[in-house]
Image (cartoon, rainbow, N blue to C red):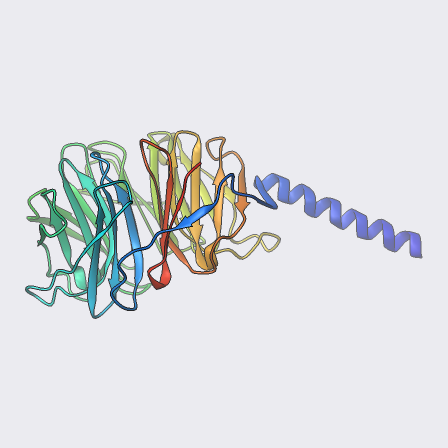
Length: 334
């Protein structure tokens, strides 16, 4: 009887190990090569940071705020040695938090609470202008552009309502598509082919955002998208899914399945890539890392317990920026 119990025990362990290996996710925590530094920002009051971007000129932008009270625009012109903080509060109840950021041309665009969209076409951090501001009750959590300059903002109002707003580079509204589920992020491969993700949904457009079709990737609240190239699109879900989209949206692979009871219960919020290196961040300071273009992911040793909402890789020195709750920001220099 004892031999049978031991045999059953080791058989179960072996099966679990095989399943975990199939997921391509390592349970061990990988140590950082260097120390992860906390960035000393001029913090105004309570709030959180939701977006980070390094633009083509090397300026670093971090955005966030206090949802109903204040927007925060941080900018560093000297590679993070010093930071300027700006608040926009001029018209249309614009003093609301900012949740997403993108670059097109020489301008930076941000979206936030109560359907607010901002644009900064100047070099100074106080050059922000309020553009779109009429999508009340919706929160913009994703913004992206086609190569030709058509802008798209993903918005949601809870889990049951979502929109994709199309606009011009000068912030002129061009169209709104509504959906019966949250839309959290949007990204384009080229002028015609684009994707959007949301609550239990992956959408695709092949006509530049004029129409959207739902694809067969479900079972998670997908929070973020990242386009590496036409055949490599990544999305992550709040229930712990890491999914790879290939073949123009015809094929999906859940490298980590958030619905697998044998998997961990991490909640993911953002994903980014630079070459073969990629990062996924989420609640309670979780960071996943790949150095082989997403074939395998390793959980990194935690450097914070705060929720991490966004991650970006510097295109020049390859340092990695993490931002999250309680105005926390970090930088890792490989």
